[in-house]
Amino acid sequence: MSVWDEVTGQPQAVETLQRAVRGSREHADDPQAFTNSWLITGPPGSGRSTAAYAFAGALLCPNGGCGKCESCVQVRSRSHPDLTAVVTETLIISIDTARELVSRASRSPMNADYRVIVVEDADRMMERTSNTLLKAIEEPERTTVWVLCAPSETDLLPTIRSRVRTVGLRTPDVSDVADLLVRRHGVDRAVALRAATESQSHVGMAARLVTTPEAWDRRDRALVGVLGMASVGDAVRKASEWVAIADEDGKAASEDRDEQERKEMFRSLGLETGTAIPRQLRGIFRDLEENQKRRAKRATLDGVDRILTDVQSLWRDVLMLQLDAGVQLVNESQRPEIESAARSSEPSRTMASIEAISVARERLAANVPPTLALEGLLVGYVARQAHA
Ligand SMILES: [Zn+2]
Image 1 (tube, protein in one colour):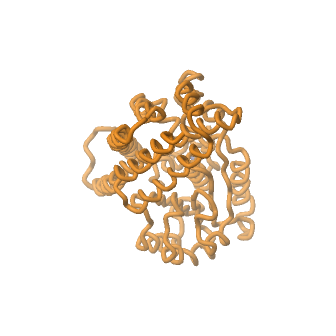
Image 2 (cartoon, helix red, strand yellow; image 1 turned 45 degrees about the vertical axis):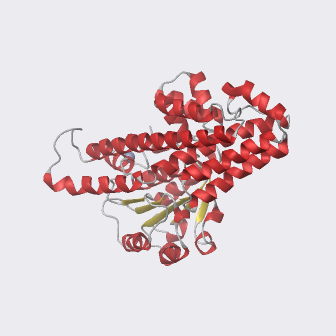
Image 3 (tube, rainbow, N blue to C red; image 1 turned 90 degrees about the horizontal axis):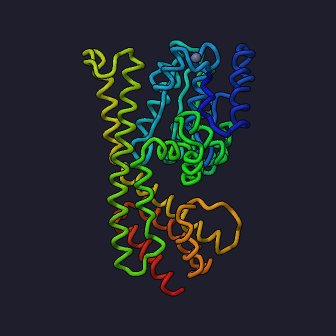
């Protein structure tokens, strides 16, 4: 067992990070031998934060990342005293958060050789916020390690980009994700393969499909009938159904995660789940609940985002058949509908529908109400089909 077990299908990245951990131990007296500021990039679901915490775990563990010791357990529950985990509850990282990080980064570690600061969504920093961090990232304390995560290097300001060492993750293979699901959740391989395919190798989503039948059912419900929509009325009805599903899905996802975090918190504090929380620890739980409440506000939008990703995979399947691309369909279970849609339209129209998804995403990011943005998307799709 090791902290790296959960990092799926990323042999090169793991090798690079493991080499850095080894270097930090073997050349502890040579400050040049170790890079203190890192950036982990990769597409959504490739496991950026999983890799970041594995790296943190390996640096903080007295055994180099055994996955079993107290330090490793604390990293897993994000409660290690020398780990700062920045998880964005809001859409952007505030300047106050950045200042707090700079102050933490200047302190020496308490228990371990390093103090590790993981910023899960470093792309959610405005320019002013990035500038606050700049000096701390450029000339970090020898014992401070920054691990930023972002979809790609271009999501960060050039000033930050040039001061970090980048490790890129790739989209893991469907079979790697399926292997992980079989190993971790004990599911049937055929089920694991379907989940890995339908989630397009997004590890977190794939795991959610196999462990939460309701989530899988919501995905199916969101996509059913989309390709057969024929009128504006159909489009408007589907859009409002999507919002309801997204709301349900978002709430369920945050409840699952909240419960998981609460359990981890109990465990890391050495408490039996469900026992009374000692007075002196209540503040910690209050903070956790505050964070969870803030995050819940984003839940519906996260649900909408998942639906858009899924419908994109559906239209992409149509396009692949139209182009005769000979690739595996993401939504094999809908093959008849996909074939029929491919015949009754043409690639340019399908492309236009896929591009309209980006427009819908931009409108959502600009605070357009989800119902409006989704109606716009689906009405446009119906109109394009009608002209076919
Ligand atoms: Zn350990």
